[in-house]
Image 1 (cartoon, rainbow, N blue to C red):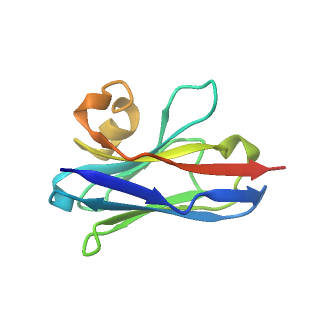
Image 2 (image 1 turned 90 degrees about the horizontal axis):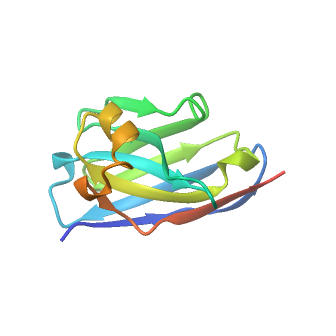
Image 3 (image 1 turned 90 degrees about the vertical axis):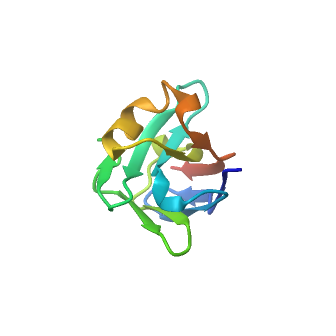
Length: 128
């Protein structure tokens, strides 16, 4: 079955960087669009970045210019490079696989979570 396992979370100071990874297994990696989502305490889950199998990307406005999504199809692994981190980036970060294109996944998968597959999440904490 589809399995998504996130890693790379941690605690950093404001302005710092982290790189998240998501190892995918149990399916043909290129079959799905991939994305990163986050959920802060008391807030709804939101899309952060998404990438199509052809490499096309979509980003939330709040992370444009600071975060970069990428993937290694040979390793079935998704990445999220996060730079210039802010306290408001503090959240549980989730990897997801679902229908594309990336723009749809970013905006709509959280409203239709059963349309995709989700990892268990990795915590990112940014202190000021």
